[in-house]
Length: 345
Ligand SMILES: [Zn+2]
Ligand SMILES: [Zn+2]
Image 1 (cartoon, rainbow, N blue to C red):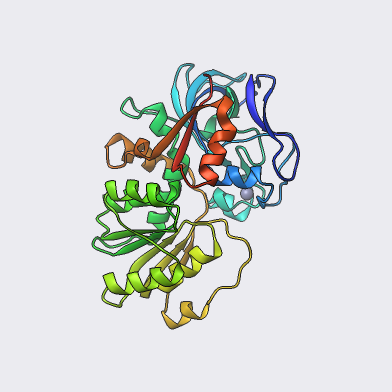
Image 2: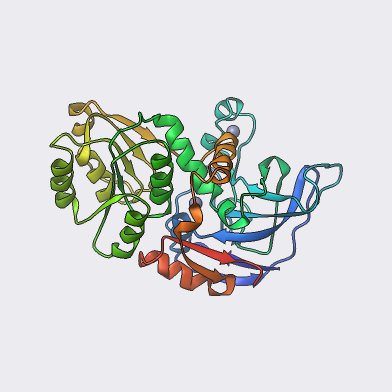
């Protein structure tokens, strides 16, 4: 089968290679991959700057972790799901034995496996995963929308942690896919007004944000603070979502969140100096959110099924897997919101 493969550590080393079709063992399923999304984390891997947990990123590695598909067969002694079942695919599995795994928070397992980071990913024709990572899809949920389940589950996870009251004002710093999925889930939850902040170069992405119901603003850190003071009467936003993955994004979020407000950190940010004093002076609640667990996937499926979230609206590029590197460049240049690959074409 064809597979987008990181062949060695360091910058680059990403190519389409032939790989053997994997074989499902007991408790596993072979899935034919449908649409498969590109994530900012894949770009970090491509650039050789992704920092993993206890388990190193192996090489070679088939990358990608956002996909849906159809079950081809299950392993010996395994009876679910039936061949032909359309499924969403969870990216994370825990060790099952540590403190966090025993409490169901396997997204915090230091010994985790993650599709496309520690084990073969989904930018390929097939993948083998534990059947416990599969979620059957209702008829109303297309394979393309289900390819968003992994990042959408992270947004559901955020909302579970924050529990924002309807009418809370919110700012999203960083117009990437995770920011847009937060926008849709926050709007569905009665949060508003919502402002999405971007940098020069983000114009086309912010045009999409405004079509989806956000107010938008482009500038730098100082401009954001002035704009936020202006639109909130000097109070700041009750909720600030950092999804930019840069030190200036987290600093901006700290600048524009209100006293007693909540800040959510989602980006993978290099070690950085920020003005932490604001956490104390503003009596902030600062919530980190990483990945998701099964219940967040289940709720994400429901949000799509009910039409509360329409993730396909975020697709700016539909490409064949053979054009993978063009997709990476569109993401790097911030022309893309979501790049969706058709793996079998
Ligand atoms: Zn991702
Ligand atoms: Zn564990």
